[in-house]
Length: 241
Image (cartoon, rainbow, N blue to C red; front, top):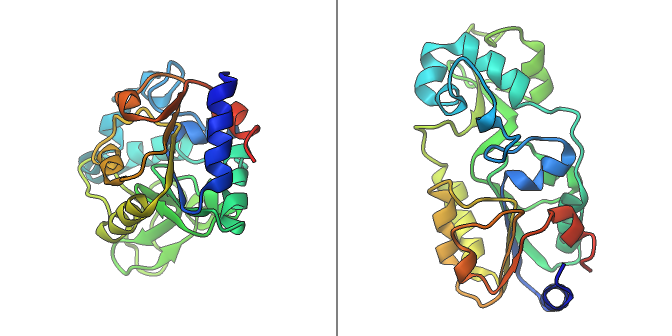
């Protein structure tokens, strides 16, 4: 790891008053949750249908049995624990240095680590609702419902509050996330290939001069960053103040 770049990042963190963290699937891989696009990721495994098809709204409506089998087996990790990245971010928030976490992840590990101001662009597996009566279910309650989950109160289908392909992002969450990015003095973007839109485009809201990209592989936004680390997130964050 480049020690000069690491020293610069440490200085930015120590002096930052409005740090914002923008994270993707790579943030949770060290907690045992696979990402999507790496060699071992979800999209490079073999299924009867492409994963992008299975987790679309059309497929969810037409083939709920296959959707929920895939969802339960490949997208739910109830025993996963926060790693050094989640814990460090929660620590910065407690210290008053971190303004917000903006995440593309749906696993809830930032909140499990203690973060309070988390904007989940793609929803959360921990929130589920009956599409007929609106009754809410947590993750444990959803997992206790067999097969295609049905609301015990009214018989309606219970849908995870996650953004599927073909669905739009929550405008309120999006607005708050973009506002946080606009206010940031330091923006750390980590664990994401920045290939998922519209989320990746929100980086354009950042107006500062301390943009940090941390990802194992190159991204298509490396050229606009002020610091770039092609390292494992845990190795970088374990050395930060």
